[in-house]
Image (cartoon, rainbow, N blue to C red; front, side, top):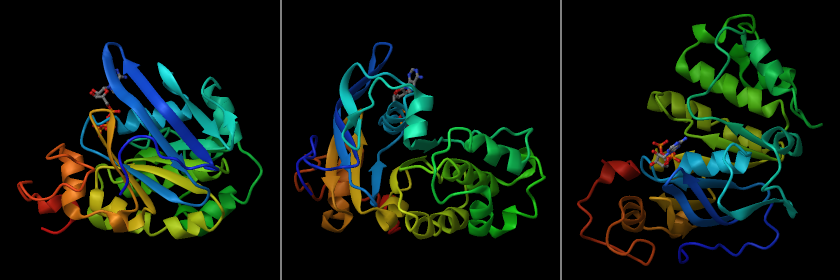
Length: 263
Ligand code: ATP
């Protein structure tokens, strides 16, 4: 694990530099930097209100930063409108799915294709990935379970043929077994050549899938590096803000092992 804030990653596909975002008076992100390499799964973890969704939404163009920049493949997209960013390949699966509930499964997928780039993902390919979906393509989204809705939301993002797929809390409100099933799809998705930046409160899930981990606390980076290099104590300290997080903190943490799935 390296020192927090300012990851040097020359050649990153997605690079965020010193991003500061305010919601009114509140500084939701404070000089956050990260670099996501092509083909990797980069996970942002953190407690409620840490600024994770604000980070993803700002990368997608839904919030304007006060300071800092967002580069996609060397091009500055900080001031590019959200739909133009989507057309360049920055596609988000938002927290809470946000499907059009009165539309059918297939109509939701077609919405995702509106700003589609050329690439391997088609509605047909999504039906191959989620085999149940084809038979239920005429069903309204409102009639689906939470896990099924999450799958449609992922499918809707995939048909846009992302270069960088932003996943905001896939696990929210879903049973652990459903979450696991959805995450098991990641290798097949990555196999088509895309890059994933995901936000998770479910730390054990994030640690399982991520090649790189960054923890936010109150809008600041408290830890970043390879999951294999992080001790559970370091992750807990960074997550809760205890005892010099990110600098080899250990002990005195109150032992909330559930955070790392070691209950
Ligand atoms: P959660 O897991 O609860 O979604 P998070 O880490 O994603 O948390 P954010 O949703 O980014 O955190 O919120 C960061 C801070 O910004 C919080 O204090 C939140 O209340 C505030 N905030 C987020 N969105 C807005 C908004 N649109 N207007 C005002 N404040 C906001």
